[in-house]
Image 1 (cartoon, rainbow, N blue to C red):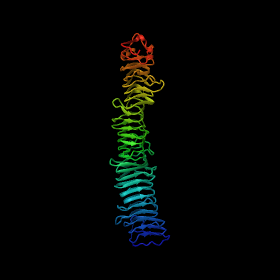
Image 2: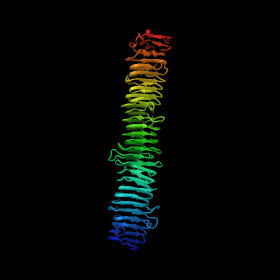
Image 3: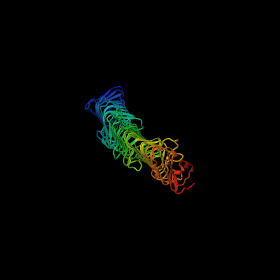
Image 4: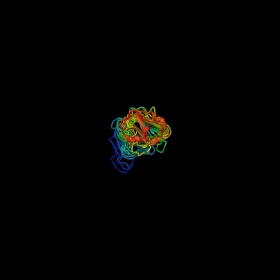
Length: 613
């Protein structure tokens, strides 16, 4: 049939236009009948409405075959496919709009939409599409689906000039996004794609409901490494399938709080690869399960600091570039977490996994906040940064050591709490005053080596196999009312290079099983070393001006060790002095506290000059 079609007379009648070829070249065609309309009934049928067509009048429009216009609109009301169908608005020239004003039911048939690769040649679906075999978007300017597209076997995007946007739910077995410089969006609150998805368009991919709070499921995982920009919103889940996003030239940006989780119905999870910078002033949560690695190749918060980073679980975690975030938390891990860049946090940092490594310039700067590192089966290893950790408070827990003698953990902190449970040493070098607080420092199977650029205060106890504490200031105690500050099974060495060890009001209390070596380099008019406790042997590494005072018994001590004193005096309980083997020799010492003299029998004191009496 060819010619003009006049359907201006309404009524409740049905109208069928079938056959292999029909062409209507008159004005824009309106169907006013309110019964059913049929346009084509077989895949090979072809119907041309040169000036466009409007089918919203009929109660239902049954379509099949090819329906085309010449750069004119194709407006559809409620539609049911009766066979595989092609809707084409650029049969001869550039292209026109396809509008879906009513719901479309596919009945398992395929639908191909093509409008032309020119501006304004759009697909606008204001009603749901369901039950399609394959929905193909072949060549359009933009395609927008405001309502759900569900129960579809395949959705295939061949090409677009601007973008394709599913603003509502999309559920399909297979999603194909072909190469082309266009944007593709899945913006629904919900959606699920069964098979693996690879986004090959190069302009942009948007995943998730733009206001946040939605959930997209990729049952086969997905790869979005071709687009220059990937925008993330809400929760994006896979059941143990990999997620790979970004490329070295592009960016990942968050428009809302975002969760990437590969443990949906699969606790073992799978890898999450972020292959470029992640930006956006929102929180990012990553969960790769017990078996999946997390790799962030670019900076997290590189241009716009993110509000927080949470790693729920993972095997290995690698943050390979400088990152700026709010609080950073890793709740669990079955491998190694490696920081290769500076992590600058505006909140607390907490990492719990098996091994924690600061590699190269990798470090943590939490400012005035707290850092907690828990290496459950391995070590905490420092990098080559000038400072590994900057924070107000640092809590360390490891199984096989913290730092090493050749590579100490370099810190700039105020308070330290540390524990090592199996083997290895705790080696920390701090800039500034350092306070041992909380539950203290414990390493019964190795040594504790602390170095501080200023004072070190033992507010809480330090317990170790052996200990080496060097303060370029003083080593002090707080008001703990005589609690044991230092306990070692073997040796202990305390060096206060420019200060004192303890004070008369707050003496250090110790229990040292081996040799206790002491150096107090501060020049004081009263005491350089003041402590209580028990020791197997005692050795003074220097003899600065000042008074050395032990206020309790020295168990197992060898009085001959005291003969190394030259410019100081060592006072102890008088029943500890052996008058047959030991005397004290003073050289130019000035006493300021004469009340202490009664501790030493006068017949044991020799002097060249005795001042101040």
